[in-house]
Length: 312
Image (cartoon, rainbow, N blue to C red; front, side, top):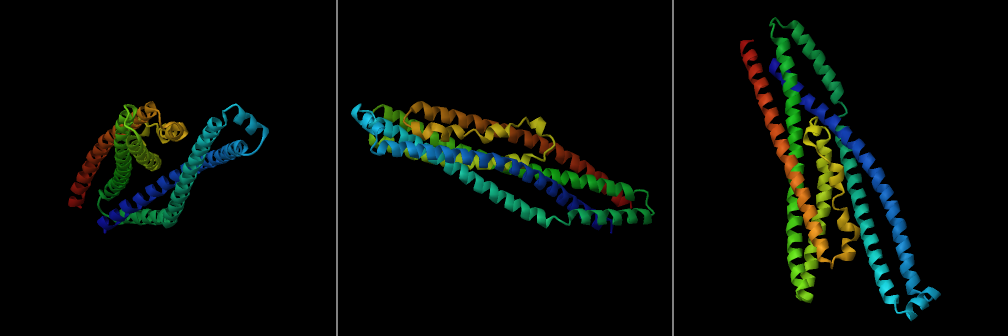
C-alpha cells in the first residue's frame, strides 16, 4: 500500500508541475501575441503605402510624367516594387507566426483542460497519506512519504530538462541546415562575382530560399525552446537571452530579399546564424550539466527511500 500511494504521489506531482508550466507558457504566448498583432497592423499599413506608391508611378499623373521625362521612372518603379515585395514578405512571415502562436495556445488550452482535476486529486492523496501515516506503527512512514515527494519533484524537473534539451537540439539542427545553405549561397555568390553568369546566380538564389525557410523554422523552434525554459528555476544560471534570439533572423527578412545581390549580405547572414548556433550549443551544454546534477540527487533520494522501505 505504501509503494502504491508513493507511485501515485510521484505521478500527480508531475501533473501539477506540468500545469504550472503550461500556465506560464500560456501567459508568455499571450504577451507575444499582443506584440505580433501590433507588428501585423504596422506591416499592413506599410504594405498599403507601398502599393499606393507603385500605383502612383504606374498611373498617368504629373509625377509619373516628370519621372518619365527625367528618365528616372523605371529606376523609381523598380525600387518601389522591391520595397513592396519586402513589405509583403514580412507581412506573410508575421501572419504565419501569429497562426503558429494561435495553434500553440489552442494546444495548451487542451492540455490544461486535461489537468483540471490534478489539484483536487493531489489534495485527496495528501489526505490519504496523512491517514496512512497516522495508522502506521512505523516511525519511518512519514520519512518515506517525504522522500517520495522529493523524488516526484526531481523526476518532473528532469523531464522538463529533457524536453528543453529536445527543443534546443531541434533548433540546433535547423540552424545547421541554414548554415549549410548559406555557405553554399556564399560559394555560388563568389563564383557569380567572378563572372559565373545566369546559372550561378540562379543556384545562389535557390540556396538563399532554402536558408530562409530554415531560418523561419529556427525562429519557430526557438519560440518553443524559450517556452520550455520558462519553468526551469536555474534560468539565470543559463544566462539565456531568448528574446533577442527570437529576433535574430529579422535582419534576413528586413532588406535581405531586396538586396540579395550584395555578397556582403550573405556573409553577414551566415555569421549571424553561426553565432546563434553557438549560443544554442552553449545553452544545451549547461542543460546537460544541470540534468546530470539532478540525476545524482534523484539517485541519492531513491537509495535512501529503498533502504527505509526494506526495513518497514
